[in-house]
Structure formats: structure tokens, C-alpha cells
Image (cartoon, one colour):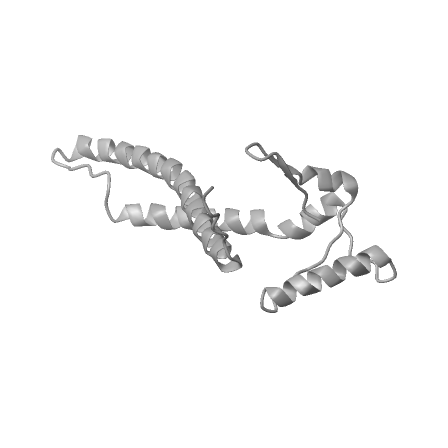
Length: 154
């Protein structure tokens, strides 16, 4: 049996950052391609109209105007990214019915102590504590087929 190498918090954060950049690049591509195709069609129609009056005109697909299309797609993708991520955590917590731990409940107190120890072990990392109802916890249950382990996030 091979030794399993565990990822640190910082490794996971680097991986997430890389994935976010790739996801944004794909979003930018989704905006760039249709805008570019529409721009090429409009540009071609203008070229055909001009070539009727001026016999010797050259049609270029790529040019300085491609930067304008890329900037427009970048602005559209940035606005899309901003509005789709705006208040996403609070909306998900509201949908799941998450609550802050009750200071007078013994089980919530134990939960807070466990999270405090994890924060200390992680180098002082601050973690926001939320409690999810049982129905919402089942939505976060995962089954991994190789070992059939259930992981439930609290």
C-alpha cells in the first residue's frame, strides 16, 4: 500500500486559485467568441460594401479592432463574474438555513472548542462557524466508491 501524501491548506488554496483563473479564462472565451464572430460578420459586410465602390480593398480577420473585441469581452466577463459571485456565500447560507452556534447550548460549545483548536493548528486561521440543519447536511454528504466513506461537512 502506497503512502498517501496529504495536501496542506496552502496547497489547496494554490490549486483553487489556479482553477479560478482557468474558469475565468473559459468565461472570457465564451464572451469573446460570439462577440468576435458578430464583429467579423459586421466587418465583412462593411468590407463588401466598400469593395463595390473601391475595387482593391483587403479584408483582414485579425487586426487592431480585435483588441477592442477582447477588451469588450473582458469587461463583460468581469461584470458577469462580479455579479454571479456577489453575496454568494450569504445566499447559500440563507438557502441552507445556516445559523450561528448558540452560546448556551453544550453541543454548540463543544463544536466551537473543536473549531478553535483547528484554527490554532492551522496557524491562527479564522473560521466562521455555522450550523446546518440535518436536511442541509445530507446535501453535503459525499460517497467515495473506492472506500465507501461518507464525509459529512458540519
